[in-house]
Length: 161
Image 1 (tube, rainbow, N blue to C red):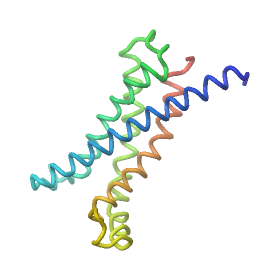
Image 2 (cartoon, rainbow, N blue to C red):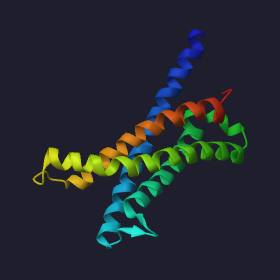
Image 3 (cartoon, rainbow, N blue to C red):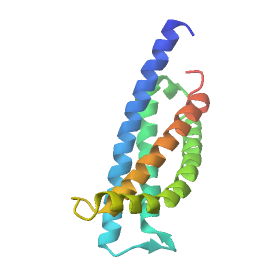
């Protein structure tokens, strides 16, 4: 790979990572706000789905729109010459598959990580073990889906850029 192309890709990866960090902040922020609101309202499940799972799905969707906007306008600004609808459809498809990977994984690891956290930090920590465990589970699934999203979007959504 010629040095100029490698330098351009490295710069793009750094931008993609920064956009990912902003998406992670949005994801965690919305997740914790929704989880808190659901708990305050006494809503623990909707249609037999735990409110914490719903919070995770909604926070992911909002973070996807954040990431799409910044990747299109900052990481890959030349992609604006492509049809917005086609690009959004591709980005959305990759993200939907990421959500399909993330949601069952989150549901599967949330309780064991919460129990582990409760044993590790106890009840005297400034945050309840449930919140800490849920956030560790969320961080874990975000990292897994990050790799899926980056590589597939680079090869499909933003190919030839």
